[in-house]
Image (cartoon, rainbow, N blue to C red; front, side, top):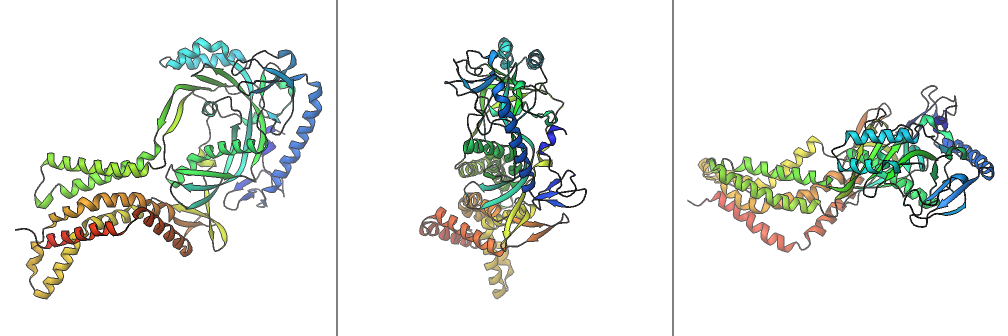
Length: 540
């Protein structure tokens, strides 16, 4: 049997490979049509791991293997006894020797090295030659002889996973489920995760049950954490692996993910890596595929949340441009028009960027340069696309959520338009009623809508800020919900109970934002009434 099939799920009825049905949340057999519960693969994996641990413990007394512990960086490396060195492979500090202890999380599988050290150096040299214009290449060229091979501890992940998803500044919680397909999570603290992710993927068909003979000629680091700490690290990394997919689905980057994975298959393994640490610059070569990853010397800052306030600012500028370009029926001077548009954009930007940046910081990361590899990761959307679940009448059902739909954007734009132009509309309505009573319809032509600018001075910034605060609540806390049907179709759901809950959260946010109601109304109502009066009774 091929070793990568250890974590393959087989049908409990006919034994054929089963596929996970994310909607039903179990494994479905395409061969016989039967379903297999998630508890059966977990039981078989536990049986296999128990047997593997027993064989490893029997082999350990005769393996002549020594553990080397670094008091400086905490690395715990095992090597063959005759290969013990005096310094740590990571930080070059003096090491301490001890006996090997197989604690929880000790790797039970291994992907052996395919590349020897000379071949790994060649891969690194090719990267340096292709990126000769980068300063990192010169540093690596001078230190290439320090490249060392080591087995690093990973958790191999496969199976269903669920997340509780929360959006920034919101009480609304979502539940989503997905399926992780052949994910390798590094559990060492010595190497940067971005660096190691850059040299992936590994090919699971080379998996073998671990034997101590594999570490001859190579060191192997074992996890220093075990139990809950190891579980926390694995889930933290899995959440980051899954985050881009959930962000694409929810159309925002301001999310926090809390994973739960009772049905997730986890297998600790040693994976082959050639590692080079030059201080500010680090490099890793995949010991199986030869893919090179280089960590840049400088950190970079990104602000993924800026897109929403930027689009909002542009929308305000376009609105001002089209409203005032023929202000009062007379084309406005281009210079004055662009000054007005620029001023409105500045005010909108100050409001929106202040609101959207609240509680958010820049993402600080170091760029990773990757080599060209024939092996490519699968598209995350193909294997990890999440399905959301909602409690409807006491039953959890699979749903699709909609946020920024075309109809919703049009409705919000219409509301903002009505708020800003309502004095003119109200003045026209009052005048029309008066015309019906007097029969003098010429009064409608005497209205001067240019006085609406008095109201716009207040309404425009307030409506922009209101949309940023309350419009996003409407969008994210009141999603459009579609039930996923068994035939693959979907049906719109309208949940009254959820709407009441959303209204309560929205009202609380309004109260907390507005604070004292008296002062805003003392300003807003007189200004609104004055604008309506001026439109109806323009100065001659």
